[in-house]
Length: 337
Image (tube, rainbow, N blue to C red; front, side, top):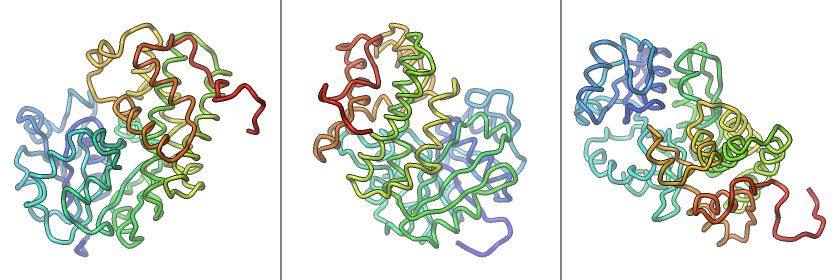
């Protein structure tokens, strides 16, 4: 990244999180250009400093503009942030790759795994862009978009196999209400962001059914144990799952009605079928798409995930939402916590 007081950064994706993170970057001093797929969204952001569809009532900074032209957005960018639905990331990368400025960090803002391959988003970026892993970073944490857009204080973690890349990105992705910390555990940071979505769907389900705080607290606690076992089996550090990208994100996502995954679960708990939930959701609930590939990875690595397995059964219509519970395990024999 060039040394400059006001770096130029690009954000790919003008949904609620992409727009919010662009706002974070702009209010941290960066000149920020946002890529929007639809001309009307780009025009509204640039001309009125609003994105009324995804961030109603939020004023955007004067230094934030948008365009439907990838080449215009990427031209001269010193850092590139990517925030598109996880299942469409690979198709977007074929257009981004030839326009990507040489040597710049690429930051994933996405929390999902690719259904066809089970790959994390940083792995898809590595494959799709053909760039060194040390240029790739991921940002995660308790980051509900609308709260941050309202400048409510929070923190995040920026992770890269290169601490220099993580530090450079964190320095730009910081402002008076948003603080970025760093680590080098990309595996744990990404899986924390993916797995908490699945537990949040479970919390939404029991909320929709009408169960109380004991059930939800038990699911969060046992869910964190599942998350940690899974991530560690694939090379993560257990401490990452008790940090911002794990426990922090889990608490925020499970308890907030702003969470898309919580909302999707609540609809399932209220008796809506999976296809009906998808139709009702205005935006992607990444947890719904990640359940199957995560369970496949868990099975391949010998990890037991009973809560996530119950979510899969509810999604498939084979388990009554009222029967989802944190006490279910593979055996009735007493087990250690």
